[in-house]
Image (cartoon, rainbow, N blue to C red):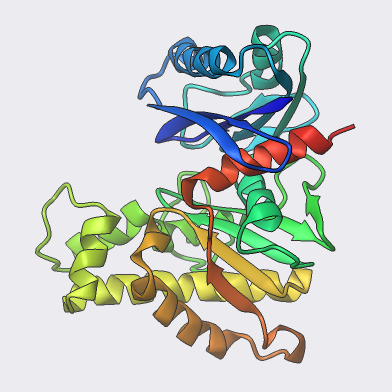
Length: 303
């Protein structure tokens, strides 16, 4: 039997079929509609689900949903910051009404990413890890003592909203100075453009990374600034949760050494406590498939 896995974010919606060994045997994606109408987003997701169900030929035993948050794991609702059309949207019940007879499990998308990397990726055999997505936003999920940690409402590990600049930029969440406002791709690019970078007005983090790799001083500063914010947050969460590994994926992480070199250099300045000095920060191994694989793992192991 196969597990249907869904990964829903502000940029794209993905559906996949995962076998019991954790192999992704089918995947389909579509852009997340930019709309104020909740039903338009649902229609896009429902079609993506239908495509996967057809490919499965009836062999689906469970459904795992990873969605951008906040979520309410008890009520089965989602209110993603980057999908404003969905506010307390009854996602779990809607999916259950389409995939009849299958167990449906809802979790945060970054929790699913962390579980996927822990099961099949860079976090295998790691006891205490933080999985992170650094992309249009910054998300995180925790695996503690080898077990996914969801917290009271399903939102544990929401590290993108750890405050690193108390008087910093206003974040989409309503707070100020969240690490997301410094290290997420659109925020880094905007900062670079505001500070004299000669990139195109519609540039994204990939273009900024190319400029930084080529030595553009403003682009380099933007990445160093973002990496330093990530390092401060990682050291803080590492101390609180006694972590031994952080796995980072997402579009910004694809910049490779342009991000990881300054991040590790800054991390050395923040990890003064003896028990986090050996905290490792490594790139994700599963790319954009980690969330699907993790969602499937959570659904297939649920009781």
